[in-house]
Image: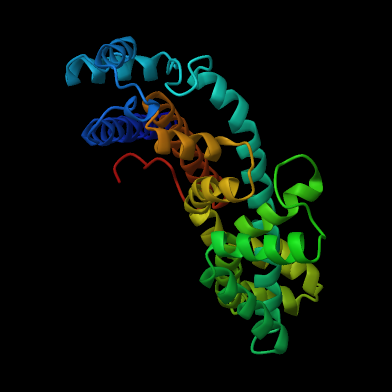
Length: 310
């Protein structure tokens, strides 16, 4: 087990290094200076600013300084907000983004599993058709279009929910719904297909022959095996939710990491772009690692280490 974890950690570090390097290459490949948009026509002022942020140094020196900032978890001050460090922005924005992502994944998993189970139990029935119709709509409609429709109808026209910001549970409903619909649809379709397969297995027939109630058969026997494919794709779904929240946060004016990330790209704020990219990359890599471990724990047939001689 320890050998497996160490190997995974090595892969995680290598993956993060590749992401860091690619981010740096893309950043320095963009022509121009981040200070051009400030209206600083004085070249001396621009040169002093570039020197202050180490942008006047050779690329290999900038790259080493970049790696040092990542290793020390100190990404320096923001270019567009000199009185704020990147760490300050991360500390202020990530809890809100994490709250949005956590609520979204809970809503998506619970609703998706329920829809999938109902569709499987009522196979080729009206409930099955309705559940899969909802799933198809959830997959087909992009979350930013759904978010716009929700704001227009439920917030502006009918005034049921607030239009934007992140202040109360009522403010959370629309962004969570817009962000959870796609993952919920994927989970529902996957749960339905795997549940249909599991319900035909011999051990399920044996459980029915023993006189177990349908509830016990579904919860104790069928659901655990049916959820294994869902666990497998949780890492990918989590990545989609966390990155998709950037757009949703902009639409609903949520003061999370998406707001700072999009603004940093528009303003070419190098420290913020690199800091948020590294932070989110590390977060998602760790989540994928935990999902991999959970998959091995939930299914005893999966071994994280090979026996000697195999």
